[in-house]
Amino acid sequence: PIPSRRARRGAAPAAARPTTTAMAASAEDLPPNLKKIVGAFQMVPDAMQRYKQLLFFAAKLKKYPDEARIESNKVPGCVSQVWVLPRMEGELVYFAADSDSQLTKGLAALLCEGLSGSTPQEVLSVQPDFVELLGLNQSLTPSRTNGFVNMLRLMQKKTLECYMAQQAALEGAGAAAE
Image (cartoon, rainbow, N blue to C red; front, top):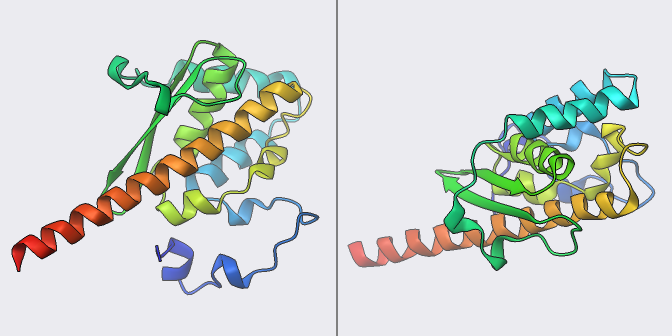
């Protein structure tokens, strides 16, 4: 199992906390960077200003490598074209992303910034309903919301793949050293 920061701090693991579909998303359960972003969005009372925040995130997204624009990095079920790419650095995961739409690029950038620097366990524990905490419901069409959830799910899937590959490489290196 992948230890989370919460577990290392002595807090109850996610499995020990009650979870129901009726339970509203809580910012307390989010990785630290994502929690900060949610807090920043919650401080903005106007829906148009929150929309502009998304466009600001899009503008500061780093260039995505052209060679990573492959089908396995492409988010399925998205009206726009969106690609995500994780990389492990030690115990933490970092993301790159891009999209052909500014709004979708902003959503991808929000996830990249919010999830980068987290442990794989923290990324995997993020529930899709956290989007409600951002207060973007008025700004996002149902298809954009669905695309956002698909982005998160692909990032989680690729995080798990990346972590498993890292673990296999470490096990292989350990066996070779014996």
